[in-house]
Image 1 (tube, protein in one colour):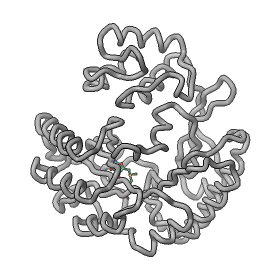
Image 2: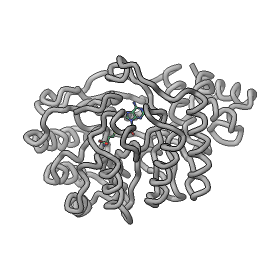
Image 3: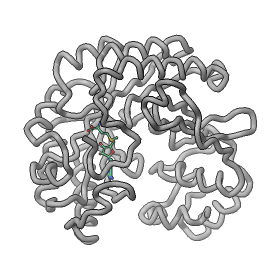
Length: 349
Ligand SMILES: C[S@@+](CC[C@H](N)C(=O)[O-])C[C@H]1O[C@@H](n2cnc3c(N)ncnc32)[C@H](O)[C@@H]1O
């Protein structure tokens, strides 16, 4: 079953018969991407954007074997997204033996009415059990705020549970109502804007006083545990997406391209066709850069970026500096610019 708020490209077809076929298709897709990879080193791998924990360890091994045919960085970050219901000591030991060294747990909340409201197939008890099984491993937890049945108290209890678990990374998302989801059509009783702001203040105060730092709009970590994989997106590095509906951004010579793979599972298994291939340039590139780079909380030095900043971007950037929304010494937003980031990004539209 797909979560009623989720618009990710996922299949809810029974995966058991398909996982090895899909893994072979992904391995084939990777092999066929040699020209795009162009001998570059892989620094991270992320199994996610759905529930890869439904797949067998054999299927994951097929994909990782294909990855290992490429040059790899010595300190590869290999993250695996899991639904709490799929976490068991056996599963973790199988995955760790394959080289997975970071686990991302889709907890969403440690409160039963909220989890029911989110249509989740797990409850508070299984969330805690899964979190405990991950203790001592490098892991990250997903939580959502602004949901039905959530109060300041229930959110505080969820954050306390997270902090008690000593997990070193948190992705904290505000519920967004995406078109084409069940939540879009349903009338939901959600917390109002003041309550949402209260939750954000509470989260900041609790997380900061317990040693977590925000390094991106939705990302918090203990120092040194930032997600290398996600930082690469925001720093405008290249990435190769494999699997049905997977997105890629690849620079070939002077051209920056974004494309995705076709969505239907069986179609992808038969042929890993590219769809929606676009060259990102001009105004579109300025916006794309702003939407990624400005998410990094403390900003970034231009020479740490995966791209040379176009003159048109820098011109718009200077307007933001004048207005006190953007930093002068780095690429990034000031405290005020970050507080109203959506508005700040509009400078580049
Ligand atoms: C593809 S989901 C990962 C699902 C995870 N593997 C699981 O089954 O629990 C990635 C995360 O994005 C967040 N997310 C998805 N849809 C969202 C929405 N509409 N609003 C806010 N957060 C959302 C959730 O926290 C989710 O765990």
